[in-house]
Image (cartoon, each protein chain N blue to C red):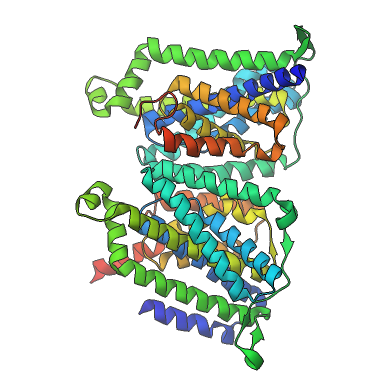
Length: 286
Length: 311
């Protein structure tokens, strides 16, 4: 039982950091561009398929393939921003609907290119580490550590650098930030592209653990948005914690309740948190 | 006036067009048009982006069929509890959203959450719904009484049944939009705080708009399920909601007739040009984006503007 519980806990933490990295993108994009990008899951899917393609079809070693995969997701994000989302700044409903339209386009594009058959990537790192009698797959630990590190670095970057302070200033008062010399257009595009690259990284790492299919993005973006709301939109640490809570609840819940409930926890969390504490766990009360 | 002319013209279509294939497209457009007209009331008039209409659409389809089967009722008597259930759900969800002042994105997310929960329930309650495999529906709606009763079978009968339903939905929606309800909802869309200051009961009118929208979606869902003779959990999917949103945006939000035009465009277009399912999804996505960025008023909205300029 303990073995099962700890195994599931670890699974939950890894899935939770994946939710967290999407939630981080959702929170950042919402704070700076005023829209919720539901297509983030599709950029995750792009990152995952790029990593799989570069590693398994082209034959690059996985660590080498990781960076271009993230870059491809980021470039797609740049294109989406310049062609579409530049025109929906601070218009929540329009941004939401454009991102939803983009989902169908990217998803059906992926279906046409790679079909619905799931793709399995070759093992990058096999073997397990034994810790106190419990076997932990190495790759899962690596993915967990990498994602947690990236989220932590983003947090530090936003707290300590001029760019981060500019972003905070913009989130508080766009006009004042502009008057203080923040190039707001560039900042908005930068944050949008960064969030898509984060999603791409999440996808590229996801590819080493699970099989890929064109519809993977829709599920993850829903969970990312749920995690972001749970933690409190606008809160960076809330995004990670929200993701972890969601991921752990799902995997622990799977032990005791039928797996059919898996997707229900997040939905229930969202309704409960918005009713009881609309600012989220880490946000100020609204 | 234009609406009445269009209705008469549509009533005459089967005299000229005999091809089943074409009439089928009309029938689907009529049915989805009802749902789109409903969505326009909550989104185009009251300004609330609801994601719950796919759930209403699917729940009504299932409930009508299951009630009919359980108590051997007619389609119309089975439809009543289905509509009552959808109204009850609207009141519960609307109360949660509007009482806690969940607006814009938060309203969309919470209605989406409830819609997805409904889909999960339908998908996993296999004893009742047969899960993802869906249910075959052999029964047909019957109109008339006693010896005059006729089952609705065949393309032509369905054509007129759905056309009449759509016409009734449009008339009802127009009556709502032009009444004090429509004006109160319009005020809420334009400026909620100001509307409240003016003494408009925001909770009541949002709730009304939400319930009316869901009832129309429910009617469409029941007709859709019985026309196709099949229902499965994909009726409640997010994609179903999105199709209806796209129809409203393309036709023109807040125009009552616009959503019907949008339903025709989105249902007919994929048949006019020969394309597969993937390309169809891609096309709808592209149309949705183009409608928002290039034609925010939609087809009917742009025409109204042109006509006003000409006068």
